[in-house]
Image 1 (spheres, protein in one colour):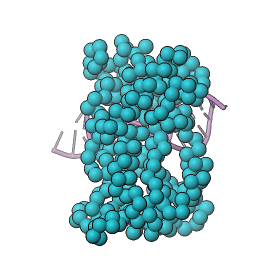
Image 2 (cartoon, rainbow, N blue to C red; image 1 turned 90 degrees about the horizontal axis):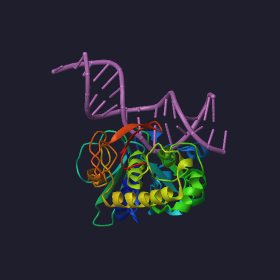
Image 3 (tube, rainbow, N blue to C red; image 1 turned 45 degrees about the horizontal axis):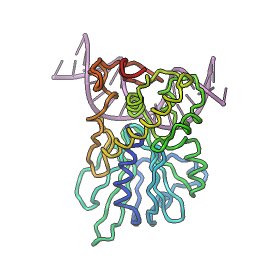
Image 4 (tube, rainbow, N blue to C red; image 1 turned 135 degrees about the horizontal axis):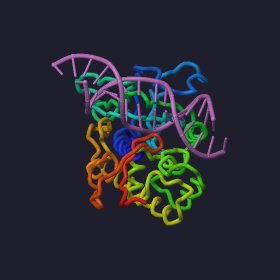
Length: 284
DNA sequence: CTTGCGTCCTGCTCGC
DNA sequence: TGCGAGCAGGACGCAA
């Protein structure tokens, strides 16, 4: 499940390979993954709307969203959802078509005619490709409801955003309008590192809690990005390699196992309708 | 307004 | 061994 670290690791590989390159061809194999209101506004979906015939001018990220921009300021936002991934392969290499490959882009590399193929693959189809017409359209329509970036969150911004909500802190962390980029894995990891139980109500957190939480969010995400994210099953970097952060998870997926800090058996339950794991001793 | 819950979708795991 | 139920969850729509 790609969260901020997975998307950022993907973005870095992608940018290194396709930034400044020309898109020769775009093929949409499943129209309904191109989910965009703009499509309806603009009428027909054309390859040019997905970058065909243009250069890649930006490869950015906001929260969990991957942003690819083309000449003229238009572009697309890839949401990976649960099982989505971006694969980058040599277009000349013979290989079987991966199942659930919904869109692919053929990209010129400028080196002796070899070409790359970028593929959007998403079995569960919780993800999709959203089109924007300009940087303003991107900001105002696709990114407008996102809170501040989790990678750089500070205690003040965190407190201002959370206010005094009467819901579990984990539910607030999963809310992209509060902070952008955190999902189920990194919510559990950050809360463990901050020593805060996931079911603590936001209103019950004090300044010390928020300080530790903001810091743990930043450090957890930084470490995870460096590791290429967490590969449970689906996540792969564009070159096919897995992320290795799962090897050093302290909370997520460790229900019933000994706490890596104190040795107590890790507890788990549903919080915010998501499976949640924590340590009763280390988190208060 | 805030919060909570059902829905989408496929593939994997588990139990009988 | 085979098969069906249960589970995983990001974002969104709707209800209270």
